[in-house]
Amino acid sequence: MLQTLFRKKRYTEDTLANVFVNGIIASVDDSFEDVAMLIKSDGEFEITPEFSSTDSDRFLMTVLVGNLNFLPRYFSAVEEQMLRKCIIRKLATVFGTTFDEFKAHVENYEDFMWRINHPSNNVLYGMSKTVFYKYQLAQYQDEYFREMNAPNPILLKRLDDIMRNFVWDWDAYLAKIKLTTRT
Image (cartoon, one colour):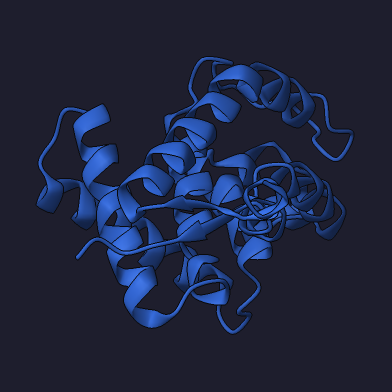
């Protein structure tokens, strides 16, 4: 009896991908309006950024791609590849596209994130910069940073604080479950 109380639940990659996808989408859907308000009201902007508080698609893609880039820290290469494929398959279904089309979209976002974040390998920092550039926030900053087309470091730090809330807590989750592969 006690053994079953303390045993981790076993999840297949399909179940884990389902929980992950639903959790990420729900967190962005539930909070993007607040995120947009935080960004728009940041004191580092000279002009209030103009984007809709319902324009969450670019933010969602940034969160998804950032979280996919954390997978290798928690899973073996084989587990990570299986889980990644399963996540992309589920997302393709959610967004009404094919696996290959959505995979290409994810890869484009990843390439963009790594390109603007080079030489840093900090995923969180890359997520913040991706939000900055995808929402074209440079044009709303003071003249110095606007002309450089670069984020003000203070603004970037605040974006890091926002993005930190959207990083999946694999440590806590994996303390409760064990990934089992289908045979």
